[in-house]
Length: 245
Image 1 (cartoon, rainbow, N blue to C red):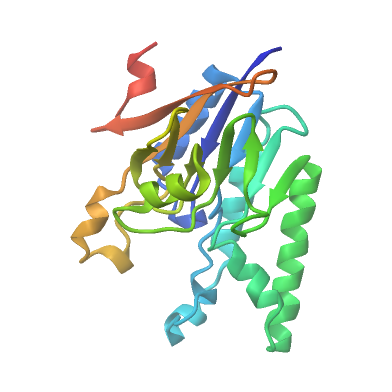
Image 2 (cartoon, rainbow, N blue to C red):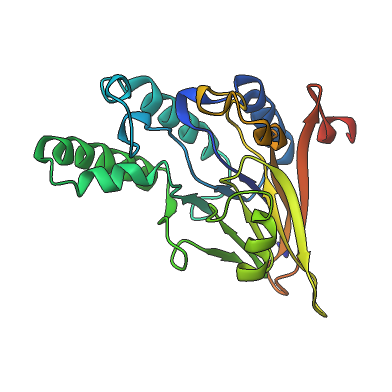
């Protein structure tokens, strides 16, 4: 098959997922039937492991968070062809790797167990794991690249376009795109998020009103590398892909 369907979704944040958006995603997957499935990172939130976490946060259980991520990725990677499933480590996921390398022995031991369990699950699902890394964490599918994301703020899409060219990314929880000048079209797209948009940490930050639910999907040509990418998004709970059917 020359043209292959793909989906790129990102930023679930485990127990902070938006259940209505996740339900819409799986309705879409049943209809779209992608050959290539890419998760863009931040499967889990891991709040107690963040730098600067308060005493109350450090005492919080991560069980529900990890279980929610595990259940989601099992469902997501039931779609796509084996060998064409990709998992980007996000900055929140990477907290587990950092904890496994901690000088705190008990924390490192427990984080190591969690990391091995996650990687074992992804191996069982025949998914490729890409690290949270500026170079090694970039997936190339034809002329399209995907990654978790390394820039934040209102110029994030532009910065990703300048560095990576045609790329789909998460991280910012925003739907945005920016083309860079050139004879060949190169555009970066921030695809939105699967998580709640209103959380405790951003409740007084009006800039986060830019955030939106969504994901990207399209087709890539296995011979020429050319691709088409589209944005799934909802306005007042109505999804554009459902209207187009």
